Length: 225
Image (cartoon, rainbow, N blue to C red; front, side, top):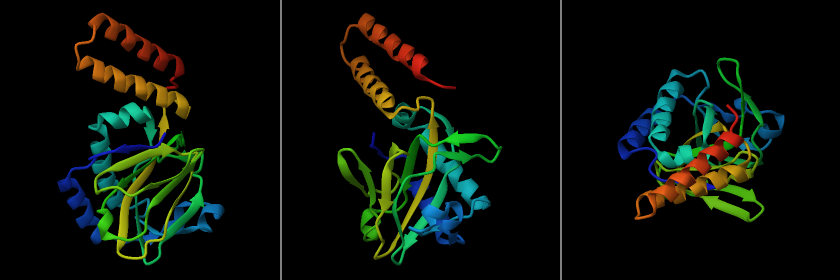
């Protein structure tokens, strides 16, 4: 399930992050990938140990926490602290699949079920830099306004096309979902969306309550916590 999350960050938050990133010291993005990824990755990142990365990551997480569609779509159990990258002067990341298991700072393991990218500059500020996500329905091109995010299955083959003008700035990270199966998460999101619409209409309250119970019982059956 590929889903656009509009306005995860406010314009003021985007400006704050941009000012900080304009002064940041970037390192080679290949430092955080294995041998296979290093062959096709050409970008810059904030170092994992950077205090600035942690500070800006908290801003991103706060935006996600107040965005109801993020929780409904991802059903997060654990989130890898957000990272930040920069693509410029031909920077690119060829087709790849994200690692299945990642280590958190406290030593716990995180299974990457859902990938998320938060765009931090406007599409007209740079040429190229499209996120291309490939699935059974073809290739989907994503290039969103600053502050918007996209979530998609971490099992998807995807790439970032070369940036030929300007610079592309983004935050990216992975989520371990309470529901690991993407098709089940999709069904739960569709049910949650329909229930939200019904609650705002003149629908029979008893029927809405019954369907709400079905949603939670399905989540109870499928969730891993």
